Length: 170
Image (cartoon, rainbow, N blue to C red; front, side, top):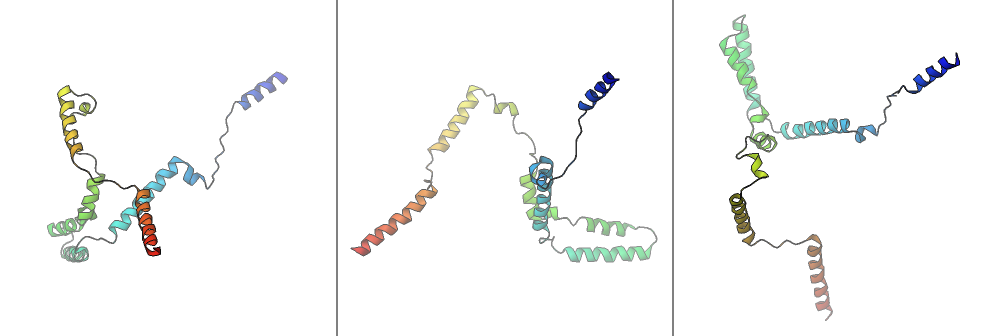
């Protein structure tokens, strides 16, 4: 009998029990929640961009289409060609057709196609490498503006101020 109890205890020790608990810190610690937060952020950004920038004459076009839809619904018990045209005109009003949306789509769209073989990024003939090297060396020969680092930008006004103070003292 004791042998059977020991076997049952050994079997119970091998069982893994997962207790589902929730902590508020899980909302920013786990990748799954980060995906949700990023999705919500994208939606909010989209609302902030597109809600105030409605398509031109949107209200007029919708009102016109609704008048046609109501007139056609009263005229015939079935949907007429004019009803379908008005419905189509109403469906064509989309924020993605606005210039701002097209510009954003250009940045977020996937690349259209390869202009060259992708393998050439890794393997090139000597002539191809020389041509790229010459092109880059020509770009490097062009004069560039001198960059000022932030701390250098801060030091110049202080130095000038000190010089002015010294001149005033003399």
